[in-house]
Length: 104
Image (cartoon, rainbow, N blue to C red; front, side, top):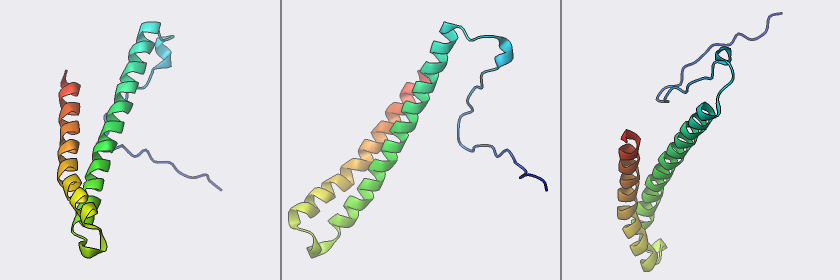
């Protein structure tokens, strides 16, 4: 009986992460700090990207409520309408800031 065969599947759309090569010897403090800072920046970017997606999803839900008719109170429909127009702009602003900051 043979065990399962594993196949390496490359991640699509994900920046390659440098893997530490242990044959180079121990990591210096400076190298470790740089590696951890890079990792923190990568995680922060992922979180901002997720937030932008969440804002776009909320905008869609707000649009549905705004167009929901009499089932929703007038004030709720009005607020949802404003959110439906504001949230996509906020998501785009987040993405633009993220792109500018990653080029610097």
